[in-house]
Length: 113
Length: 113
Image 1 (cartoon, one colour):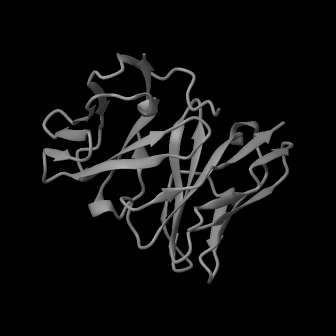
Image 2: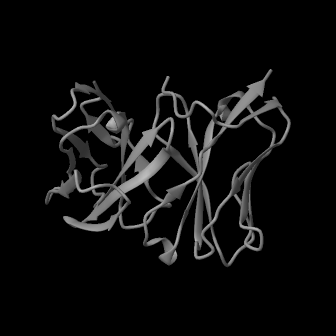
């Protein structure tokens, strides 16, 4: 069974640009959550999607948005990139809502120059 | 591998010894706690969880202890092996697991041969 896949794995952007990251959950999983990981702030929850609806949102500005498609694949978008957005963005999926059966992908490393 | 924290606390233990990793949380409303393991270059991996109506839970070679009075969580790993070398994070949430996760800063566990 394939794990959570994230594309691209590495990305370099410049300030002011926007970026879209993609996450394909494990087959059959309907819940997808996104996290940001930086050396300074550690791991931080971004948002959770279930059945194409955002169920939870972390404390991030409106520049961070996401969506989930009917096949449970999810995308997150960051507009007007800032240097501080450089981070590892992790996606995790689970069959139903909840964290105890959540599987993480390898992440997308975003570098903002 | 990925750098997950420049100033992570580090715990160095001898192979075969027991490891104890500690975590303090601040939200008295938190009612669900998780420990994750993150190996270099990979996403976090669920280890064990505990609900606030329990003070101890055991898994395979791991035990989580919860002290709600002092808002303290610990992870004990028995007979530490080289494969246990990783960064360990605690995470908390409230609302029975329905809210977003808040993560601790992480502890880097190093296994000495």
